[in-house]
Image (cartoon, rainbow, N blue to C red; front, top):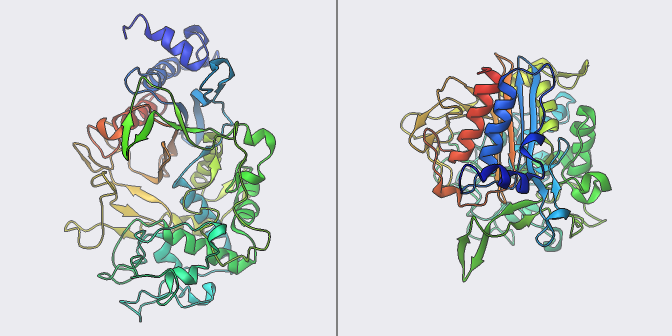
Length: 456
């Protein structure tokens, strides 16, 4: 595609003419329209297109930039029925949900309902022990920082139709325990980092049992409502307006004879959250017993939030627990949550820094949040911006085509958010130049930081 044709492509893809780009306010700074154009070009790339992109930047504790590009819904037959993403579009934020869940945990700790360093077995109602290390208790702290010795090798979600109690999965002799693939047989709890989704189903069960409330409703009461967030962990209960503003997640990928076929010039294929054409289903039966199966509502990855909503969460954390003049968490609770509680040793003896095809991505962890230490290499490391120097805490998200980042530096008051509604290309073929991120993610983060934070 020639440079001359690119504005036409953008107009067709995003539903506005080049003159109709998201307009900076009359008092805007020179970097703002430059960032608009830069992000538009990334999202509308003819070879690496994105279904949608929602971004937000905070500088010195204030939102200085928020934009959306692309469509939250793409009609496969009639493009005129496609719907643009907007500033309240809700995305399934994938593993950023873990950080949101941790906020609920910390509120229950403050209320005296939970304790971070107690054996979780009494809270669960059954003995939770790694069979290879039966004398070592598992605590909420080790569940929250991925050192519990649980693994995802036996799965991490069981729907209502399977009638599962987590005891069936986790306890030796349980009907779904099998050969115990969910347990690390080499490393005792508290000694080794392995990124684990299953641990968050356990956390959800603990939270339910401590309160007698279903996880989704508990999180609404504890976190979403107090922070003024639209969305939540159960799309079935969203208002019609919010439901129609959920971003469908897409890929330009199909499966043929068991093989993944990517076609950047082909149609967008819905992966999840196509609520224009399908209604969400309830994730729990009416007789569900809270505490029996905390995986149902996806504490690890099922929350729907907007970039603006994540900006409010970031504001609260930057303000050490306060938002809109009210205390959401005590300052010491925020400090404990964000304090580094695991760090990789140079030898790799205390944890796995790789994650799937991403190399050297994990180097340090707090409670439900990653610490980005600015480690850099060719398609490896956790560096967030091209020139380095932006060390941050937060979380990443990756599921069903969505990729996302929520990262901030409490010292400077600077933070970045992006939510991508799916790629039109195989991300593993678009490798990062200085990190384990895909190249388009590097370009987005670096543009946001260079323009909105450094004002270049």
